[in-house]
Image 1 (cartoon, rainbow, N blue to C red):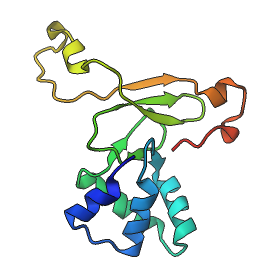
Image 2: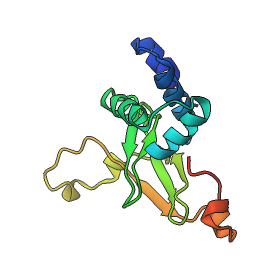
Image 3: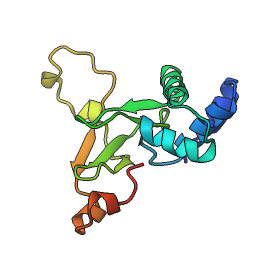
Length: 148
């Protein structure tokens, strides 16, 4: 489980009602919501929360390094609270479902020195793409498991 709420408390982040609800929506494993999805879920808990407040809170969390923005092709950016645990992503190319994965091995070591072209590589982001079980079973994207 993501420890986002605990990390924010330890950081002394001022927990307004709006910030708390955004953090609660993001907290958990395999959470990769778009800003619009965060807003929709936050508004279910706190109807008066504005889209601007959600965007500002997400921006602040990213700047603090507590949430990571994940971009996949032309889809909307997603927000991942597992910012302090190295991992990669598995993405359904049909419905957009995304899961955290922890493959064995070190992708930094797996890259041959001849392929670094003189770069000092410090970080690797990998996305495995495929079809999720719900989409493979013939359901439409709307019937698939939530993409979060």
